[in-house]
Image 1 (cartoon, one colour):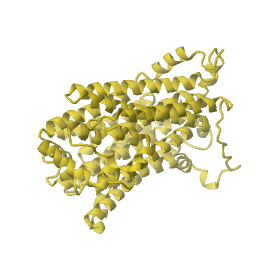
Image 2 (tube, one colour):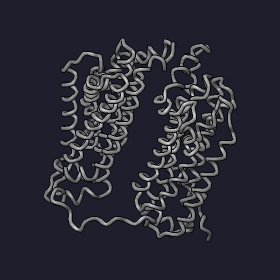
Image 3 (cartoon, helix red, strand yellow):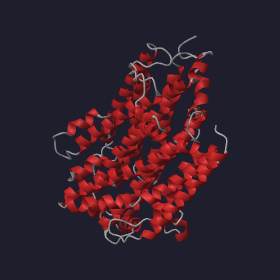
Image 4 (cartoon, helix red, strand yellow):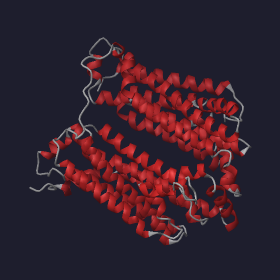
Length: 534
């Protein structure tokens, strides 16, 4: 039996398991790029309007650092600037999740031990994960290129864009294959791979900030995300650059295959750090345990919100020049932000996005209860002197306070960056910090839906929790732009919070949102007391 024996049926099984995950990722990434290109063809119909946007971007190092270098003022070049690097980053994230899921995660859960006891080779699961990621990135590249060409953009640049994004995803599929051999846990393998991805993006940002000058532009060639931008789709289409990510993907995948043969099943090449023989006294309660389990994840969410807030604030002062003279996009921003002033409307809209991020953090913390229940970790805790409500209270408190920390981090980043550029940090910092924290009642209301479903219909809690966030996000982001009926917009709790900064503050909707959150949370806890565990 060869080391790749059984990879064909294993691939079919893996594809079946990801029949929802993969199409969703591919659809969102492809539609985001194509819809942006289509909207730009309508917003910037003249060369003069496109040149105005180009001039507002190409000389601003902060803006270039956020999205990457800009090559040219054509619709295609602006589209690639807007979402090229971000799409490459997202493709890398998709590949990391996919490869780790079918390698280290299955090994950690014991599935690979069962599979390996049959006629399946040692390297077959690794090959399946990488091949599936390669297929996903190939389909993404094809759909992205075909979609951009279908809206009238040059076919060469369209498919160069798709291949730049897809080959970046291939590199990080190989990186994830390596980290799956290094760490003994799926969480550790994902964390290492995501750190490499984040470092790649930061290196690209440092290179892009140099603009058209020299300086640090050479850093673009040290980053897979930078390689995606250096293809220069719609601005020369440098096809030879695509050889770099392909060669890198092949090399790191080969390293992963060698490492896979040098370790035992269930172990990683990096040594595990032994913990203390006894737990500290502060770990005696469920709240302390919940904090211990989720503090690393909370730190990651807060750091992401801080960076996002800083990015939002850094371009707020120049948002008018970035949007150009087109009235369509300006009108969409003002409707979304609920303000007449463009800068305040933009900042208010970004505060809403930070609210969605905080809600995602809180829902993931709440759903830890469900994973503890299904994985058998809740039963030993509840067999001791711990009641159900006390057991559930720990993650719920962490979720509520963690969401506030994430919002505060985002508001802090926005306040500092915008204040520094405006020369008025003392005023802007508390102003934007308060605007971010104003989203907290809406975050609690969305999170309470997950709590209620967990207590009443536990089998649907994961799907319902994330669906509630998705509905709130879609209604909040698209409702004002599409001019949906007011009752439809009222479905999202984020539609009821004050539009800050710049808007008026009313206590009544905030109180009602908190009351709704308490009612839903109480219903969920009441259901938890009466149902079976597991």
